Image (cartoon, rainbow, N blue to C red; front, side, top):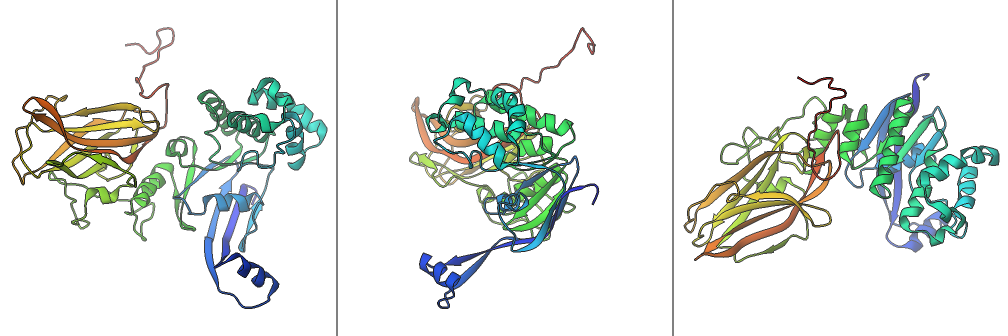
Length: 434
């Protein structure tokens, strides 16, 4: 136990679900028998985090990630099992949850510090670091109800991060504030890691998981599916997202479904399913065009041949589009565009730009267009659009367009400024030059 900072031993959390609120009261008072359904948010979860380790927890929404963190930090009690903690914890769960909106920023620093078990003298000793980190100026003397949302989370994060914990628990809190504050948060995170502190964090940011974690735990509907190295578990998570993770998959049995030259799956897993069925799709796709040339299927394929919404930076990936001619399609052009979440087109291309002029398609023809390239975008979330256009008697014409058909997650171990990595090579005083 000397080397173990956190031990989670067969922990389960069961919630009772009632048909109506009054049934909850009747059940609590044992007034009458009511119909109760049980939901297992966590089911027999066990793992250990060793001192100085950085461990990530990933999983889809509803997998129990936040629940296990709340049990570890004492916010929730488990229905079964035990949690043992060896070290002083700072938890970044719900930022500012303990703030009083009528109090000033300074008063809330003292309030939160007291709730964490610090004396006024200990809080005062950390006050300069907290205020410097938050960097909200004279607003610290104003009631927090007057703060913008950005100022609020900056102060809340500053309070939580500057108490010098032995164990840091983080739940999706590293992406608060503007880009400069986020950089400061990540710098503090890296500082903690270098100091050998124990870190346990939940994130949907696969780039952060891959970059910072020594080990990763994958949860699925309250069950621990696997734990292991970041790359292995991220690969499993990518399969889980698109429903391709088998029940018997382990960290030693990860495989990829490949496509042959026609775009069909190879091997025993071959099926008649559409490629896009293996992607997480946008439920509110915007489409238009008369569909003389129709997009009937599409896929994003990683370097291992797996259809996935997540691509690692600096790896080769493919976008495949299957098109069908429902009528004569003159001078067809196949396109794709990658946009950021704000809707700005970041990159994209089409067959005409790439110097590939296609002949007219006759009714009934099907064609697969394949775009293969290296992923140079920074880590983050993007949206993919695909289209089929062309020229009729010299006039540009849209046959079929699908806007924001699915998300594209770029997993990165190193980000630079802007949208693209220029892949700079650094030398100092000429050292390293050829």
